[in-house]
Amino acid sequence: MPIETIAEKDEEIARLRSLVASFLQVNSSLVLDTVLENTLRRATELTGAAIGSIALIDETREFLQFVQSTDLSKEKIKALRVPIDKGISGHVVQTGKPVRVEDCYTDSRFYSQVDSNVGSRTKTYLCVPLIADGVVIGTTQIMNRRDGGRFSERDEELLMGFSQQAALAIKNAQRHELMLRKKEIDAELALCAQIQANFFPKEIPQPKGYEVFGSTVPCLEVGGDYYTFIPRRNGIYEAFQADVSGKGVAAALTVSEIHCAVNLLADSDASLADRTEALNRHLGRSLVAGRFATLLGLDLDPPTGALEAVVAGHPAPWIVSPDGSARAVARTRPVLGPGPFQRVKGTARKECLAPGELLVAFTDGYSEADTPAGELYGEKRVVDVVREVRRLDLPSIRSRLDAAVLEFQSGQPQADDMSLILLRRRA
Image 1 (cartoon, rainbow, N blue to C red):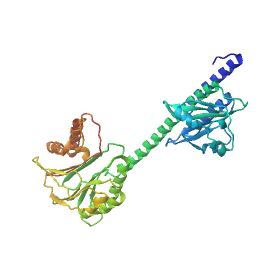
Image 2 (cartoon, helix red, strand yellow):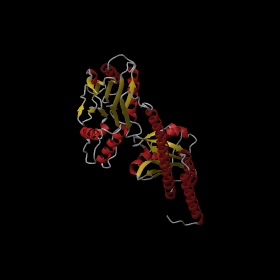
Image 3 (cartoon, rainbow, N blue to C red):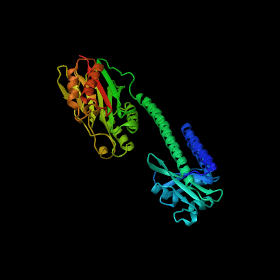
Image 4 (tube, rainbow, N blue to C red):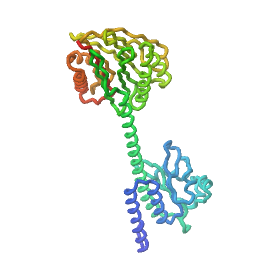
């Protein structure tokens, strides 16, 4: 539209300056309410409108929720939700096009319920879409020119400019909120990781005549793998390794339950198999359907090397002899958890760790490590590496095994928690 008079030119310059000021404010503040309120105030002043408001589409995409208004009754307005298929604002959301109305009560699209709830009467009305990243996220509307006139095409162009600034402010504020929330989550996860680290033994007790080593590497900040070593009062040396289904915080919560239960049951005179069943009953009550845990429990009598093992759905531990031969300790029951796993009573398996023999136990983070093509590392490769380096000290065996898995993966990132137990009877 051509500018015909000096007064109109001056007015247009003032409008452009206000848009620039609004843009600068949007980029200098992340307080969304303040930015939107100031943006609306400038828009209403320059268009001569009595009231301005901004509404956003809610998460369900079924309603428009008012987030800011220049009206004195703005708290009432903020409490309103307009169905997205109702009113002129709903029409603007659906079409993405601005609408100017000279008399709302003669327009069939007008949603008069807002007037009824607030106790006002809307006559002239201008509504434009709020667009962010090419998507309509809400509307900006101004109502009732103070001079009683109608809103012009220039008013519409100006309000579109202000709406662009409002959309930018909303986008920046949402990004800032996500960033702050991410920082909070990261801090919480760091605290969870610190708490979980205390579940693992800081110093591994070494029974006379034996070497013992344990390690775990979670694939996320916190993990679903667990191991511990407990010298019992009857002279038995106990070791546990567990792997909870899933990853992250949910799995870590179950690990905390296993940690508490295992340590409480260690004082019981019940057999290893019976204590495992007690743990299974507890997990049956605390885990949701579909969740489970695998468990390896070992009771070692150090003087004789007698070994009792419960293998509940866990990868079989292997015993490697000094001559390089190896034998697996078979599973003794299914996994632990709710539902059908409560109806199975497991047993324990008897073994003997002879002088020079090495027991290796691992979670499926080792055996199910895969290549980019999806080939699994497998239990056989784990055992073959251990057999090859069986004469090294235990930390070196772990290092060689981890290096072999890493090489096999060919750059594929770690997809599961990896835990290892090595127990060797000295020759």
